[in-house]
Image (cartoon, rainbow, N blue to C red; front, side, top):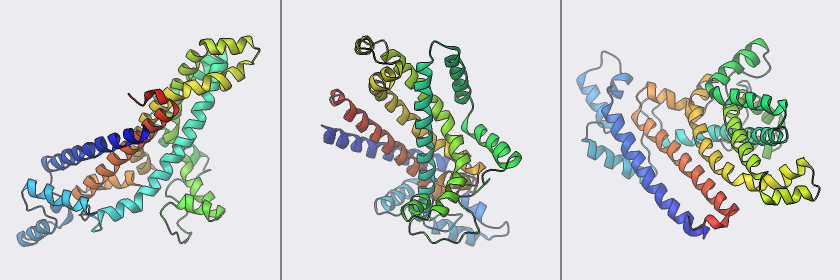
Length: 335
């Protein structure tokens, strides 16, 4: 049953997150550099340095530090950011919605574009147009998301300034929000002018993240569609006189979605990693941009919280994909 699969996956998720917590904690203590030394001036005295190390618990043995940190996480306390002097959990809750909106928008664009390219490519698979689509898809697949981001900055932000270059919304707008999901809240509250401004700021980073993922979806789905077109049920439908488009969309597509969904879920987790550089390029206020600042400042509590947040996102996405695949194909419940 799906409930038993869910419980099993949740147990595995807890173990995985615990392993991630151990690894990131140890790595941050092994790499050179002192976060306290980066936040104080060169003329600070030994007593001041000792007080700061004691305030952030860095004067304790590693085992004790890990125990204090883990106990705090279990009570909802991820520690205090050394560089920003704010609660880490509060920072994550403030920045995470922006990244989620960007990632989900990129996923929607990627799925729509990848689906369209796969269907059109299958219909044109024996023509020069199909070869051209494959070449374009290969180009989109070969170019990383940050290169697309830089290209969009040059073309759509500088040469033809169509979209805003940075930020999440126009800084001159002073709009109160009840949540940090600004785009969703603007749509729900019918503030379409604000939603349009937010969407305009998201266009270039969304496209930069979506194009490589769309290329992956198009390639995987086209291969699955071409294989499905050779199955007996499609041949029987062809004998009945169905058009090629109806054969692809009405018959082959529903059986090709399963394996494509699983691989798309895996690629979607990689998309969260891509937000780190893309958000930095567009000065987008998400957790990816904040992660770079945390690494530069050697902000150990914030880095630990960010890594756990990314790990939880990866696990939740994979869990949702596993459940979706099983729901589409109940024969996999025992797998």
